[in-house]
Length: 239
Image (cartoon, rainbow, N blue to C red; front, side, top):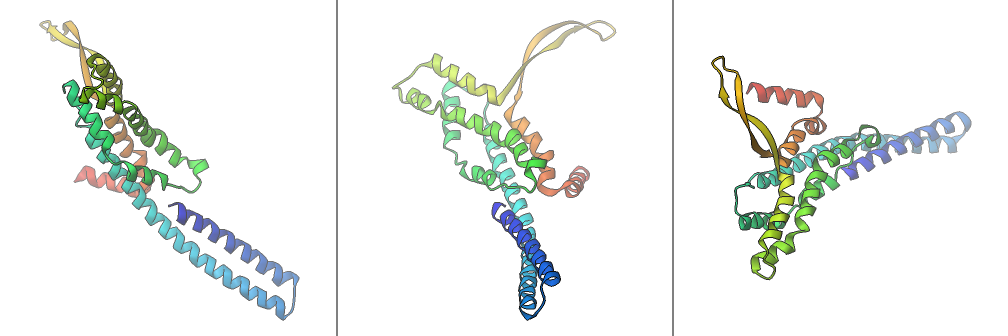
């Protein structure tokens, strides 16, 4: 995306400058020499306009390719995170984090790094993707990375400490699992009204749910545009 964006900007600048010089030469200078340079500027203008159309088409193609790649690799990460279960044993959780840390995320990082939108300072598409999708996952990745050696020392026996490891696991688990207390009815009267209830702890995926929601909302519009995104959403709903 970045390369084609720059090519588009350069093409616009060359076409505008060559056209301006052409007008200046036409109205301010006369003679064969002026006519020669006018023809040169017109040739530059034509080439720049052709390059502009080409770069815009390639930018749009690269944009969709990059954003689709980012979605695919983000969902790969979410698929792995969704395998985490609160009921797993301590060692199983530690092994999960070790395997997740070893999972190659370089392509995912590269997809985000290649994003470069027009009018970013006004629209803020890349800023939105960073804030709502890239940064939450990246923050979790860093948190896992900071505990990897502790986990490895625990498993090989050189630094085994169940209490400390449980604390580390609980810290990481807060990123993945949302725990909420709620009132569960336990007794009803003859009219069906709740007369007794007890507090229960409910759990649900946190990071995976939040990111999945963002991917299916504004990100979808950024990737395909409002019209196409609306049409594809309607087709998915009807199909």
